[in-house]
Length: 583
Image (cartoon, rainbow, N blue to C red; front, side, top):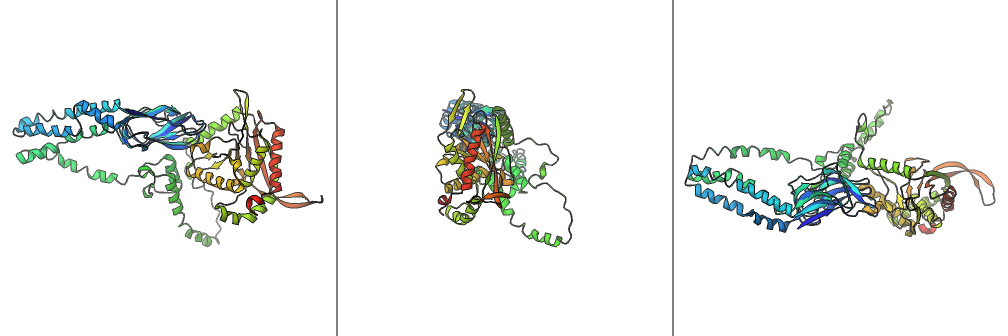
């Protein structure tokens, strides 16, 4: 029977996914759970595995096609049916080579008539392969666009990794798919042959839409034995012992030996790498031929390039001694672009998928909501001192560094519990407000691919130490590309650390349907008026931070935003986190 490869649900609000790259081509044999293709949603990139073993008979959603959740991506034929379909054609792969020598043996006594039966067996395999194709077509499994995120409804096929006629295994990557959130590979649902590609590259397919079709595993072998009997060496080997006039055909095998060096030259070819990996390698001056891939089939992943880049950074320390010698001769250095961006000067390039998604979502956010920003100044002096006291013991005990972000996150969670009207969303169509009973915190993370906002679900249940571990973990996996689809959806409030690059103030853009987003500016020392317990005032040096809150005025009024920020400010300036830190 034919198996349909469908776009799975890849997140709470993802309704579609985009095919970024096919890892298998039509006609390829695939095994169960072997990656078929890469799919991208507005949340994550992932590979879609094959639901069954067989042959990829048809690709319905091609690269860059966007497919809705549940939409058909491809068709995979059942290997058992493919085997059963060939006898219906009259011959099995094993019977074909056995029958071909028989007419040749009868023709051996007569050299001239032997040349006439030769064309007759040739059409027989040709006729058998259509039968095999028909069998594969009759028992095909569709490769469908899976669900790739909570709100993703479609995906675009960016690159096919297999061609029609290629054998694919279950879970072998077939195609790369891109959505408005992520790029990913979709694997083959079954083992077999990629029979047809339904969605070509740059085609957008809805979730559940068909990308391709995979035929049964028996259809592919039926095509391969056909060309083998057509090769002249087989009849020549039989003619040589009987008659020596057969040397004329001998030149045919000789040219066949000449092409052998060509495959040897193709051996050092670099395995396929995604555009992101290729760009990352170029930015770090990494030769991909020297990188050993750890992905499926030896495919080079982003982590492999980053590891090679880290290993390459070891030698640079010796050149550091050269500036010491050059110190006495001060020469004004001409400004040069950052190494990772030097290749951009003077070029026009297509925006990356993540950049396109960011451009689209931020514009839609500003157009669909009534955003404004309120800023409060917070004295972080007590938090700075508390962190200095606890950070060493905390790192030894928890295994992560103690940053300022867990303190702010804890204060935000407490404020959201006090002000539930901030932890809410407004539905424009139904005119209803949803007030959430849990705090699902999103954190903006700067990655090589662009800005991502992974979510820590039920963050309100975590302690300060638990928040520190969760933030460090989710940020690291966001940068390495190991996030799960659900970790990029379902947030009710987001924090963006704008101070990580020294920014004092910014106006964050909301992530609908969230009603608010908090920015955390850099903590800097400033002179401020300090009031002691007796009311005396003095000028002191304090650690100051600005907290800009962008909120949706359709749901939150300025006074509501002010009360929310005041609660956060009091919690941080109070600095009562000793119990959370075990002090």
